[in-house]
Image 1: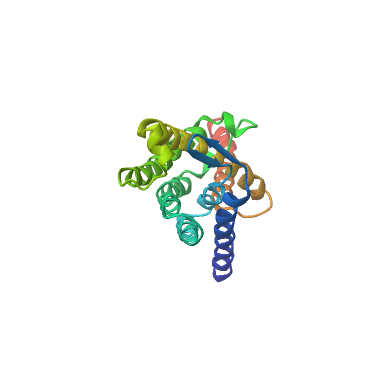
Image 2 (image 1 turned 90 degrees about the vertical axis):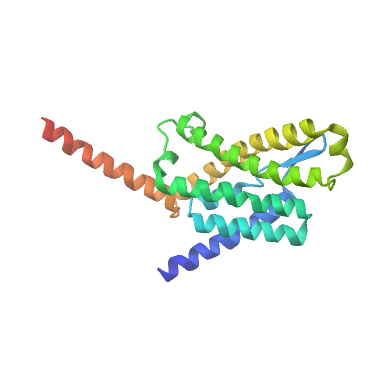
Length: 210
């Protein structure tokens, strides 16, 4: 038990480090006054596949890390991620088989993408709330006010943030799914266990029916 806790603590620390480093090195897409860094949310999404506690730890770690290396608005946006991360992690714990797909590509898994969309809505809404507070206080760069709230905040930060979240979650899934074939990632391990139990029970039910 202690060994497993140390392992998860180490993984959480690595994910926090990745969450701080990725925005500094990955490609950035700039649209108007807003910018979106590819894979910046991937470490936190991966933490969701472990446990709610790891999601909280990584969310807090990246948030406080940005207080030291970035502006307050970026740090508070990062801290707001704890909301969607905890909700997502709790849901994955309760329904782990959502990560399994009969299709070769998870992009065609309707249940998984619906979950992705709901998490993305929570994600973008939380960030939108943080940015809106700064906007109404007059603490945003002038370019945001020149474009107006609807365009620069609601469309770019809200809708753009939703699309960014959808893309990053799919990247996180592909990474976690690949790693789960070699390492124990709790949600994937539990999903495979439940699927195996289901397959074991099915022949017994058919035999009793016959």
